[in-house]
Amino acid sequence: MHVSDLCKFSFGLVLVFLINAVYCQWGWQLPYPYACVERPVQAICRMQANPNVPFASGISGIVIFTQRITCYGHYALQIKASISGLPADGNWTYHGFHIHQSGDMSNGCESMGPHFNPFNTVHGSQRDSVNRRHVGDLGNVVKDPYGNIQAAIFDNLASLVGRNSILRRGIVLHATEDDLGRGNNEESLRTGNAGRRLACCFIEPL
Image 1: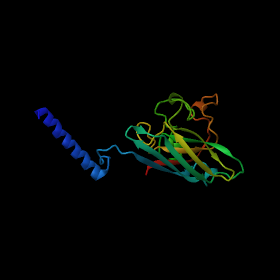
Image 2: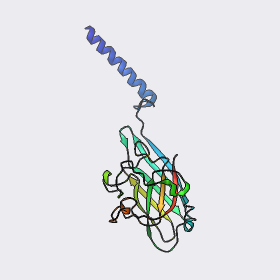
Image 3: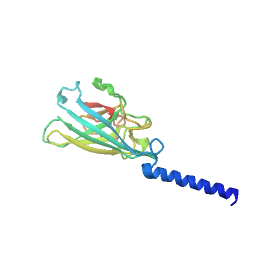
Image 4: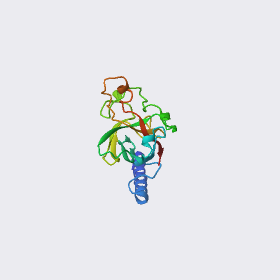
């Protein structure tokens, strides 16, 4: 047998041995940290009433964020909100729901700053392009006649990892409907004319 053929044969035996060892020990997946492991990442935000808005004092709730991270990127961010204590006035109403720049609640929801907007764009809707919305623009959630909000939101721009990470920022629930930047005035392009900040919370990793 030629020397080069012998080397190839030997290399083949070693490769087979390694594959067999990996299969026997871990199946066909390499062990962490050598493998690329797909995993879910989660965060939580415990909604509190804004002390600067007396009529909102009964609001409380929880917001859960879940995102699956892969070797090649990440899936859309899933946001589930369960909020209670809004006016049980018998009406269905829309309320702006946004991620704000800061997680600071030292002065209630007012100290959370503007919408999270790392690309310095105008306010818009989730369906708008990246240059026509804030990362923090989550649109509206709906209050039922009994004062409760149950919402499920998916967003492809906000994330729990990378440049668009919303960890340690804030969520704000507003008093009125977000016009999604279609209000034909300057404030619409900043806040969507969503009104006062009724409640807010700090986004922390789970």
